[in-house]
Length: 350
Image 1 (cartoon, rainbow, N blue to C red):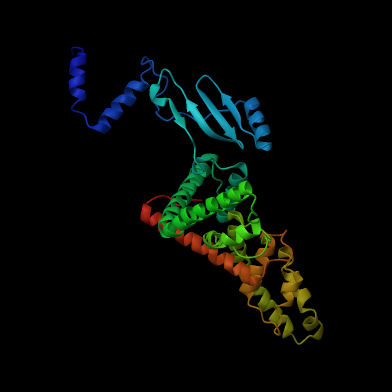
Image 2 (spheres, rainbow, N blue to C red; image 1 turned 60 degrees about the vertical axis):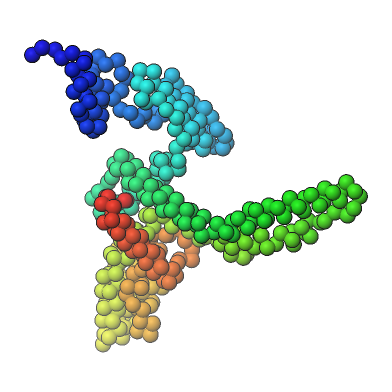
């Protein structure tokens, strides 16, 4: 078969679809004698040497930026993350570009990876351990969903609050300029200037509108006892499901002991229940609530016990009301994720 001429190849290329042309281009890129460095259009993320990584971490601890560069890229790091990167590939011009990453593109930290591993281990009862690649992919999907929801929320918020924002920015801005001009004129002419308290009073309507937008509550900083993470929610649910039948049987054992004809057994019913489930180390105050006079539901005792196992450092332990709210929140999140998966046809996030 005779070798086709360049003109014949060009004529055939014009008959290809856009997808077929891309396939041909990638094929040409991949040929070893093409002189093109890589077949991919997307450049790799900056790979730091051990020394550069240590330097970036030192600057991150001081909250200072640092520039790291090689012959192919120059990147500005802040707080340990690349925030501005220029790639240059002279032999693969398609790869040369400028990147300003968004927070949605940031890779999960080691702490987040470990939390996801613990969560998956709880769900699978130790049978499944996701790889770093699976965790990164799942976290990116989650971050993208949050980013899209936040973008939509901001867009809706702008459209709803536009009249109020115009009033604050335009009328409020004019008022600030006017007050400043009045004081400047008074200073030049020897007249008394308005005090900060007087100007604050005149600006009060605008500050009131700003506080309404910020949705803040009066008072100081709220005391957060514990910042709930993914693992905490999953641990609470898993331990609750595990402990619920145990407390149901513990209640039966308590009733059996309390109905005994033998007085000593009736008197020592709490010790009997504790001994039966010694491996679970049932809390004494929760066993006390198995008494007929209190008659606490086994499910409630299981949930409080689960809260103590999952959050041992929270003292005093969370109330039953708060723990029930956390379980409802977990179910609501799971339902939202499931609905999103069915709508978009994507795989569920971790």
